[in-house]
Image 1 (cartoon, rainbow, N blue to C red):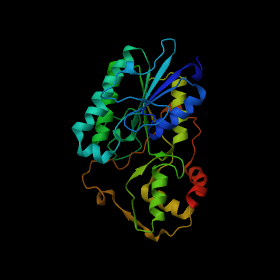
Image 2: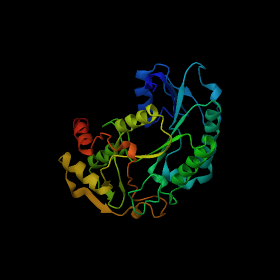
Image 3: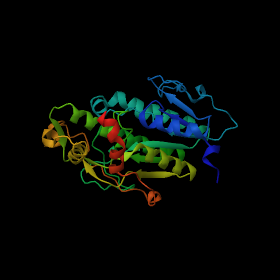
Image 4: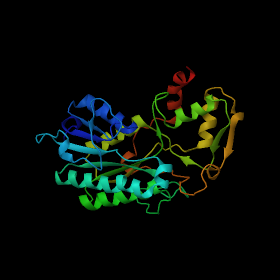
Length: 295
């Protein structure tokens, strides 16, 4: 089995949250790691627009063995639901073009998908669940998953992720978002029917490395097994920060968005490959963040 260092990752969407963490992590192991950005310039990354650029624009060396990790996509669910055609062009058509180019060069693909591919009516979704998603974002992710597997003859890897917990105080991920709301002194509306698996971004990076190392193909769910509602998580953070919980109002998500185009319970069951994975629990994530949040 080849070591991870012998494989050169190409991180599409390395200017984003997960892509940035992947580029930094793999870059420390392999200085030839390639990262791309679409619109948001970042040093050390190569500009690559999914709709406009071809793979030949990257500095690919024929002697290297590559793996492509596709993080690049539109992810704002509100925008995607409101603009299904425009977002479909990027998330499906443009991504499909990239997949075909990678496949023609025999570069294996790890595609980053989402728990939004599930309808969110029941939760505890497994890899093989085929129920129809309710959000346009989920529809698009499900569609490109299907096209990816068809183009590659099922010889690709899809990893479906849950809510990402990032670095305390440094990004707009869920814990930082909630802490900022609590610190505002205003009423905080938190939906008790919005239920998910908050998962540390560092765990996701390790999971993707594992999939690459073991050359896995197929569709895999990956998430912290712990389950929280938005309301429970907000209350937990308030208590951890010794803040008054009276400002937190328990609502149903329909009070914020009545369209019904957002899955509510997106909890997943992990794929068997992650049976012995050592997850970072939510309590540890909060403890690590307390100092930053209290500044």
